[in-house]
Length: 286
Ligand SMILES: C[S@@+](CC[C@H](N)C(=O)[O-])C[C@H]1O[C@@H](n2cnc3c(N)ncnc32)[C@H](O)[C@@H]1O
Image: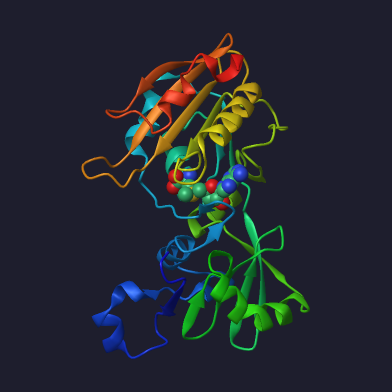
């Protein structure tokens, strides 16, 4: 982001907002609301930077890649783990398409942030205590992305650190409803670089997390080896990305753990960005 500060929608004359909409962002304080609209919630997700990544997501963005699961696997009673699921919008889509599913885990390293209100400002911290966003009535800024913003926001952030924080669940309204109403669906904080310790998954889905815009190849390989180790023989990995490439909405690849490598099972018209790393015979053998 070239200028890590933006104007907050509703905080300035409407004519300015109409004239330069790209400079405006949805007020992040909607995260503190009891019942935010799905649209506002998703808009705020798209401006939250955590670790190396952004929480950007959207419903109905994986359909052709998700179809690989339905078309090639029998998932009756299966356990699916969705790592890096963000607000769960795409998890809600997939669960709806797999009626016979046994269980579905919506997993993300950043399922929750801490929010502190200081006057009219809100300061958001990630679970490691890093300040990821500050917002007032008029401006929103990203201290973790800019030294200048960090310095300017330092007094506010220091005050926030001395006050009690409240947890902010980063699950969207539809995913919250699903978790409440469908006992097969649960959430879990999980780091894709760490071994999976829950019940062995039959399928692991990783979408828009192991991307070259976020991580180097060595880190992606490291995560892939951990995913491989967490799957039983015959288990599957679904990798999905939505590239900003004209004419390509989504790319997906389905891989089976077989012996000491991932074997490609099926892919969308275009393979996922990291297909070369996944199918490399050296991935696991080193
Ligand atoms: C771009 S979003 C992808 C959301 C969704 N899968 C999709 O495709 O629409 C990336 C997500 O990965 C999560 N994430 C970042 N680092 C992670 C890690 N080390 N382990 C697990 N999740 C992580 C972020 O919190 C964020 O929700």
